[in-house]
Length: 189
Image 1 (cartoon, one colour):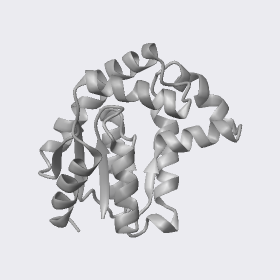
Image 2 (cartoon, rainbow, N blue to C red):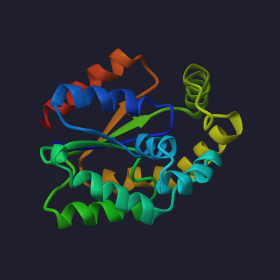
Image 3 (cartoon, rainbow, N blue to C red):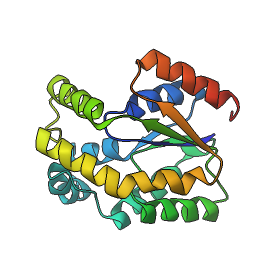
C-alpha cells in the first residue's frame, strides 16, 4: 500500500503516519525526519539544508526528489510506504508521479489532513515547547503556513482528480482521526 499524507504542519500527519506504518508494516518516510537526522549527523546534506529549514523555507526540489527516490528504492519500501512531508509543491508532485511511474508503482490513496491555521499554529507552538524544536518559532510557523497555502495546498487539487484523495478532519483527537483514517484505509488495503 503506497500512501501519501498531505496537510499543513501541525495537522497530525506524522503521528498518524507512524501508526499506519506500525499497523500495516510499511515504512513511514518523512522528509523532515530525514533532514533533521542529516543535520544531527552533520552530513553534507545536513549542512546544506539546516539554514533553509531554520528560515522556514522549502528545501530545493532536486535535493528532496533525489532523497525520496533513494529512500523508496530501499528494500523495506517494496511492499509500500507512507510518504510524509513530500511533495511540497506541484513540481515535486509531478516528479513523484513520474518517479513512481518509472518504477511501476502508484499511489493507492492520498490522505488529506484538513486543519485551520489557528489550530495548526497552536499545535506547532506546543510541539516546539515539548520537543525543543528550534524550527518551530512563531515567525517560522507563520512563514511555513504561508508557504503551505501558496505552494502545497494546490497539490490537493492535483490529487483530487485522481479519485484517490481521502479528506480527514484533522482538528479532532488523535483517536477520532485514526478511526476515520482506518475506516478509509479498509477500502485501500
